[in-house]
Image (cartoon, rainbow, N blue to C red; front, side, top):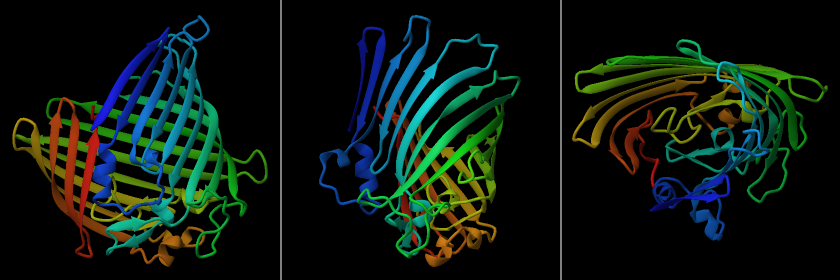
Length: 359
């Protein structure tokens, strides 16, 4: 139910990927976020244009566009050639648009789903990325970017307050501006029986102008996988915190696929801090089919009330939750298909569908 095509135009390469399948699966579990009659709303996909020698000196230009059901992302990246032992630098312009469901969405069906809160995030960023050469098991990258964040409603109009009348930005205007210095480090090590991975991310808002946000945001993820005979046990712990200036959209949203299954996106809570634990045991059923049992849990560590406007309390989110269930993983050369059946602390059942690398 998808199509992929590569086109060569001179030295440039164009990759086009269009996929209808995600729309079909999502319609089984998610309410419509917008009632648009446009045929484009039925399509998700991506368009990528790559030029390997833009000015004759092996400069690389990548232009990509990704479209989801109600979100989109456009990225332009320019790189100049450098020896592999030196840090790699690139200039990036990016614009993304997505519904702010994790913080402003309203939980429904005993927190198993999240409805639209009529708040959407439009983010434009311009800056430089610097990737250090990998040494041993460690890799790191640094970026400095100017970000312009605008909040709009489902009709595309700029807003300063949510449906309850609370500010949706830190500045109180329809947009926030900030200069963000980001440092990311990652450790990874693997052998035939296990693997370990640890990643850490620190963001610092630099107040060049008085109205720009100043904050420090920290996030980490620790993951361990162990082979137990034919089965495989995967466990991870994710946490983070933010201090300083803060807009509601910067809060850590807890709940949903990739967080605590059995809950809708952000339906557990949203806070200045968070801690989420996941564990999953997979075992082979056939050559291409695996079964899985999983247990997820998450908490905002009591920090939901510290988010401006306290959106989690106004929406009745519990602040902590546990989800458990089972699922199937189907792997084929065409792509991977995943289905999970989860139940949350309120005994509400949820089914998740996931598809990746589908041709």
